[in-house]
Image: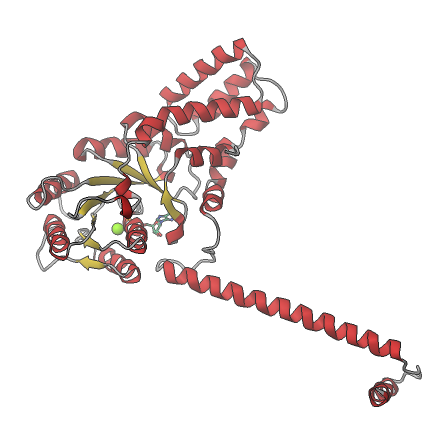
Length: 383
Ligand SMILES: Nc1nc2c(ncn2[C@@H]2O[C@H](COP(=O)(O)OP(=O)(O)O)[C@@H](O)[C@H]2O)c(=O)[nH]1
Ligand SMILES: [Mg+2]
């Protein structure tokens, strides 16, 4: 103890101080050392955790290694993803009410805002007429209006949404031995390939065996992009042999799936053709060709829609539905600045359910579409 005190005394003298060292000084120095040690431990352990999480994300997403941390719960990803839609439309009801009750002036403003939500004029007209009747019977404040809107939309799409085949979400519910064939269609850039990568990863994680067919034969880059996803997911990809057309690749992929007893066969298709051939005709042909191997194939034809497309999305959906009899939709890029009403509008008009929704580029950013979750995130209502 004395030698420690005299060492400190020497340091004091070196620093030009004539202060006589005592036990209090020693305790003070010890306390400072402890604080410094504690702080460095905290900082270094935090850096290490961040590093691990970013590495984990790189692992799951071949497209991006952005700082999307897998530990974020889906509901929070969804809420965050829909943030732009809330700031553009769904979170602006409060400003119209500004503490007061609903009256005809406010109703007009609400109607205008709802028209801009992309849910389509028919639904807005129906809603406003219902709200007008209800408002005459009893007063409606902001919360009352939001829950009215929630119930209205929930009811509108509820029946359609409940028609989704559970095999599309949950491998353990799959009964038949034959591969479930899922054809993914949509315009270029909608997010088909990315979504297939995410879906294949999800099925594989559930223990399913998956074969992916690279039927977008017109763009070499599309096949490479799909291959990266498939390698990461650990699933097999079937590509075109020389001179094979898209339908031929679909056929080969299904044949391979049957041969190896795969559970799912997912087909990536082109969004645009580089020849004069009609895209819809090519896709229809693919559907026909698949039936040669399995009468019921494809079991699902899912249209991928970029949510940011707005009103145009409805036209796209109608066109694809007419040609291919869609069984479901997948809404991607809901984290972009979409008005978000298009989702409900399209389900309602086409009577085709949304199966999955994408709110970002990593695997964890794709999940099952649940209307209650979606509507409550949009309207900021606690379920
Ligand atoms: N922000 C965001 N980007 C997405 C989402 N889904 C796909 N993308 C991106 O959209 C772009 C086009 O996707 P891709 O799968 O190549 O579209 P495809 O032409 O339909 O196959 C890529 O850069 C994807 O990373 C999403 O949910 N959110
Ligand atoms: Mg693609």
